[in-house]
Image (cartoon, rainbow, N blue to C red; front, top):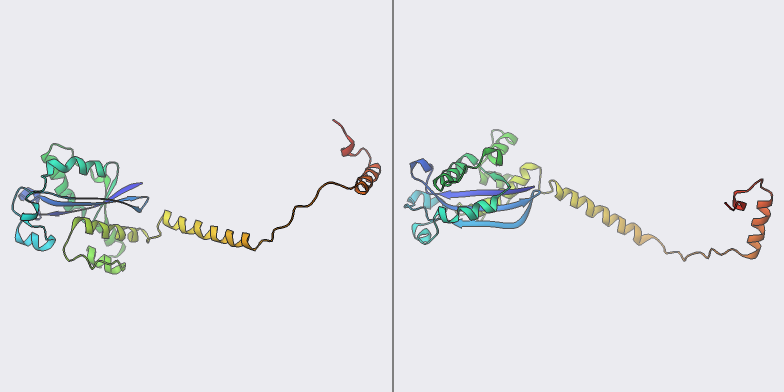
Length: 229
């Protein structure tokens, strides 16, 4: 099962008011285990980035001036997420932007059936408690000290850890099975190490043993061992 943990950074809150995506970050999971594959794309939003947005993610107008526009990178993005569930924190916000951008290049929208919202998961699991990414990192003792700014790739990496904790812990699924198999193999190796090697026994019978065997068969009525067919 392939999943993509995804986050975006934008110029503001609403694409219908002219705001655009400036960064996309993705982390690939396979059976809930990070594969090491990531995607980070900076995008020229074709508009000025407001100071209040820069204060959140640190992405400046100068930095994105030479970056590709969305129509130049969407194929790479769609290829990376193809066939995957999307794991997003506060998915309504990110999906609103992604589907708006896809609409501008004539690409079909991504359906909600392919999306898992970790914000909803956290609120269901911890009702009444803070459910933002920083709060969840603190709850699960996940190191987020590098998060001086919001960043799409960094936040996706942190969210991948949070998501696995929300599922039941870092040993969820195959991780737990792997640990169990490892423990069983260690026990097996320990047992084998304690066994003493015995020399193979010589199985050829002596003349005395053969004579005794014939004598025993003579006392048995119609013995099986004397049948030839």
